Image (cartoon, rainbow, N blue to C red; front, side):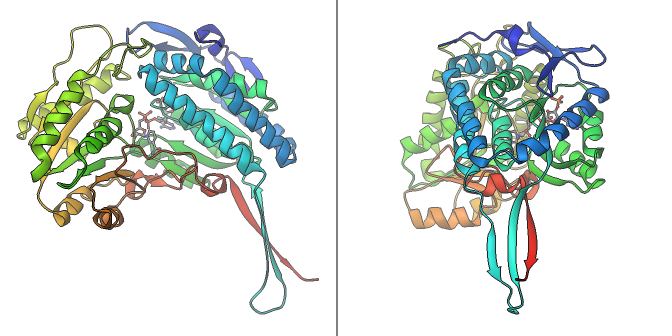
Length: 485
Ligand code: NAP
């Protein structure tokens, strides 16, 4: 089994029409290892000319892929899954190197990312239509589901493999061709996966990948092409809003997976150990760099001190280090800017009354490190109560009763994930119903599952990815045929 990634091969060029090529302007982007701040590799910096070439390639490949029998498409997707599993160690190391996440998190991501291919290989052959009588009895209503067309996909750096496969696999299953623009910080995984798709038999032009330092203009050119019919974006709410405005000019179907501000609610009657285990997953997976990360830990007064002590013990036991080193449990942040943002949020929280129980002191070493940190006495007026921390900081907010915590949990523009810990399942389901979020972990710190619909409400997004039919439906259009015979 291959374990060490070939960084040179992972950056062979833009992947357009089945060819690896230099960017039209000859520019390159440095990919930095956040553990050392050294340049790992560089990838081409696509221009508007490359963007137009990618649309041409996706358009040329579209009829052939649309007409490929579902069983054949399914087999190719299945092969993508198998190759990802075979190369899991290599892919995980690559993710750890360019993203910084601990190898164990990277391995979890590769397994999750690969699963989208297996799941959608199974979905590809189960796309059905509808056939029924019109209420007036005059004709039949026939509904056919067709691939929506060329899809532009834009993904973030925090899950470089999974955010891409969660979109590409259902799009391919539906019969669409795609252009992927991965994040500039983590392009190597996207290109390594493109090589896997190629080897698995995905025909030239069905998947195109381009990296650029000009995401606004490059994606605007793609969206302005009338052959492009779908925009699927995962990233921050701010960029999502800008892209929705851009897509509105061309009336393009949009799916938006945006930011989060997950409450993690622990009631007095929770199983303490289970709540602590769940908190460590919900807070510390990817060192807190997850849209679903627990951003506000609401702990009821009766269990507050025991929960805090347990969390501090677990956070202090985590080993900070370079992601790709096997013993690391908490890797660096993605950039210096990300560390500085966390520091600003922590300083603001302290100024508003929070107490540092552990962490909060940046280590003196190269790399973009921030230590696992626990704050108590956090205030609802602190900026971190409203913004994504996106780092290993756990602010604990004390609460007294159910109605109060539901109101505080909902006091955010976001609505992606929420977590609830209680042994009283009636209360758990009642609170799950009242909390405004697309996904709830009830006595669970992890919600992501390719077989379940992933997505948010409010400013956390539009649409769902994965799940039974939800994910693939984003890439299909219903065609109604009024039929008399
Ligand atoms: P981001 O800054 O919004 O960037 C996401 C992607 O958008 C990157 O590929 C970026 O390219 C591109 N982009 C930036 N500006 C653009 C523009 N004007 N036009 C078109 N594309 C543009 O987000 P991020 O910092 O990478 O990721 C973190 C955010 O993603 C967090 O808010 C997190 O909650 C969210 N997220 C959400 C989910 C979900 O499923 N809901 C999952 C993961 C992450 P460059 O890299 O070149 O700037």
